[in-house]
Length: 457
Image 1 (cartoon, helix red, strand yellow):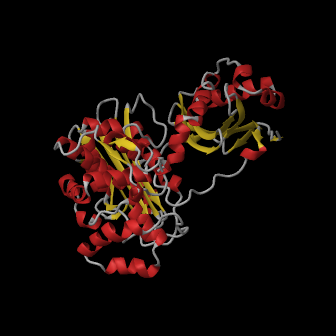
Image 2: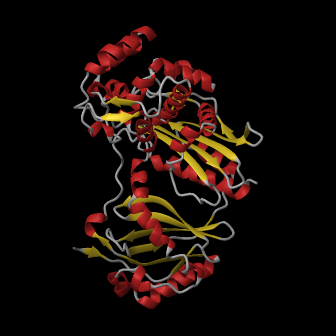
Image 3: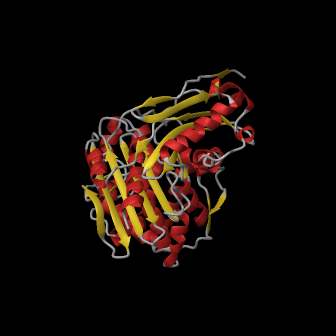
């Protein structure tokens, strides 16, 4: 298998240490990360990586911590023979110690994102709010020794809520954010910008579906153990797993909810919408305190949205817009199921994001998160998903739902601190003319969590 190598000496850039002592990747793994196809309604790639290769990457990165604390490590067990031969054993040891010495001994490491097969961006945390980004690659099979490692310049992690807000305002398109303390002393806004603006939220609307399911279970209209059979007319497009299951597969309400929230499974979502009922989910918005629930009436299934955006012609779509609410409900019940999703058209630019989709303010979404945290069944489902690595000592409970389609991003996060303080964070960005890079807003959210961790009591 071919490899490529690069080696540089230690150098100083802007007063910080940068060391790229060796990068050894299979040639087939060197491609850049490609953009997801529409709709990337959740960071599925991150979740899959976290469960598999991401866990292996995190484990190997943690084994570097003693060396970054100027302690000895087992070089032969941690790095591949090719890596050691190319970089030099003593050079590896001295470089790791030097990174630790210059920055004050590493305290922890965080996974940032997967950038290729068994390749990731990681971040080492040091005292005095210093972080050192790095990229790392490991073997694809156990023991997953390190094949590539690059330390980037150390950074002072001195962002503030004010600087984060300004950065969000500077992004093109429409943006909104709300960071709210939920308890104790609920209702305190920590950061707010256009928090009542109604914007498209993509797959984050599934939070509402989850809340409506819990409400129906509490009303004894449904049970978590209730079983339905999958139906062909409720089959949607990926992302998810259930679209690949044969029609007639038995599945419980609880399984559908788990698939919907933890894999953003569109077909599971549509089965839940039909089992709960559109009108009941619409009514749940009012129960949750949505200011403009009419924006989601009639509520679209994911398959409905795909058909309207990827199957219908411009004329058919405009005809749908001209219908009143009763007419649209008839169209969704009678016409939408007859339109095949086998040959969807590609969508490179945003399409009617202010008219087709699911809509809410960041204040609405924080209200949903606040409701969910008080429902043990819903909280148990939500907390199985997270968008990035967080320190479990600081944040023992994390729940996440994101939504993304062409021109639309929303990330909504529920946090409980080690002091039992609850926070809700929701940030949205819409752009009517351009697609949006998902990680641009995700990085912003991660920085906001860091500020909360470092500055709030």
